[in-house]
Image 1 (tube, rainbow, N blue to C red):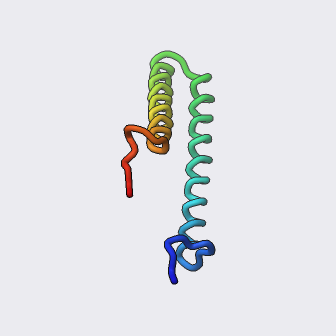
Image 2 (tube, rainbow, N blue to C red):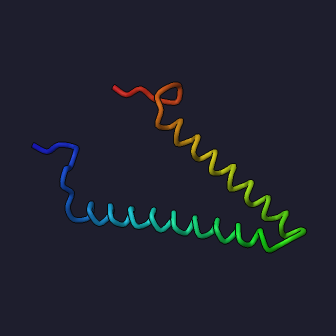
Length: 85
């Protein structure tokens, strides 16, 4: 009898799992490198360019907080949760 849960995936499922892990690891690494580069750049510039980097940093912060709140609300139970039977 087949069940919906596969304990030991093979074939394409394993390949997809590895690709997904590699993608998110690479995405995180590139994000950290980008933020680090912006911080170093911010220390070297002045004037209008510095103001642009402040706006960029504030936009990144808003997106990060919004994403974290969205993830938290989507995983918690409550008004946003749809009941399934």
